[in-house]
Image 1 (cartoon, rainbow, N blue to C red):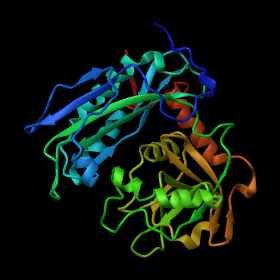
Image 2: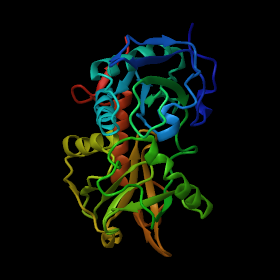
Image 3: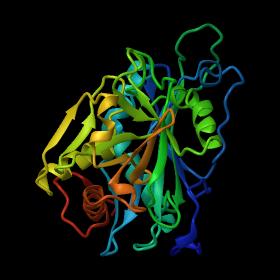
Image 4: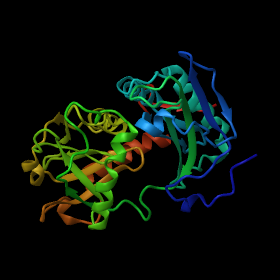
Length: 341
């Protein structure tokens, strides 16, 4: 059929219905074979567990067109493993890792005409998700579930290039001690919506959260892990049991060590240290790295990269290296890139 007739260079970061999606159902203690379908509608009972008790989790990854024209995706095995952790915590059945990865490859292949061309700045976003689908009125896990993968072409997360953002240090919590902060549960994002809307209304791009137990140590933002760079070029990332294990962050840490020969530390970071770092950024699937230009700590501004209106040199080199690996211009570590044949 050929590529869709879209203005690839001006796509929003939003949803667009594509040709096929993957659906599998869990019933009577086992998963069915699953299938690709044109039907984008989800039909469930009004009393479904997902609607009553928010029993749902999700993942996010992308497919790319490389410089030499191949269609690839990036580390879907880690998304499968992270969803397994989410499912176990939420008392949901695990969709097997091998089937998860194959379903991702199949749904990309079925929508290959929607994968944006190399150099457009756009990508094909995959959203695997699972939810309790049968009627549940008592507080208990569902007995039936649906696993789905939708795909949609998306433009760059930041239009007009990557520019430093301003975030605020939040007084609210994104996770509870010993709670669900380390899994990708829908409920984590629901509770953050009020705070992110309030941040936007007050001129901030995001909230930076501290640990929920003591409000002393830096954790992450509402939707991304945090990176710091010291004045002598060391990469430092926060360590906590309530931080979501970002696949992008873990990949950037390996890139820093193996490609850029950087020293890396994963440790607790006291909020009193914020002014000691040279660069700061957020990392995640959507934007890879988004530089933080300022942190507002209750009226006190902490400024990074000397206040320049651009990404700092160390984070920029990290981002360029990882995107080069994803786009095929830099040789990838073994097992990172899955090609869609």
